[in-house]
Amino acid sequence: MGFILTVTAGLLVWVVLWALGAKGFDAFMLAAAIILVGASLKILSGYLPGRRS
Picture 1 (tube, rainbow, N blue to C red):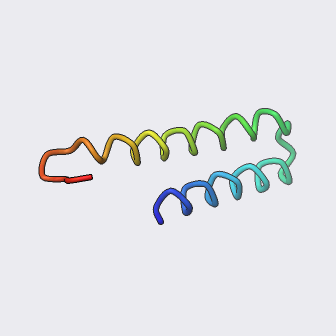
Picture 2 (tube, one colour):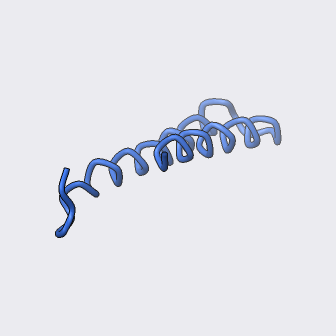
């Protein structure tokens, strides 16, 4: 569920920045960075102590 919210927030940031006049590619790169961090945290959370996956 958290990853879906991260993707939604990243795409929302992309649309808002693009609407405010930022270049489309620059806004997309920021959204992609947010999504990449969210995916990395989702993958790495399985390796925390006390977690079984």
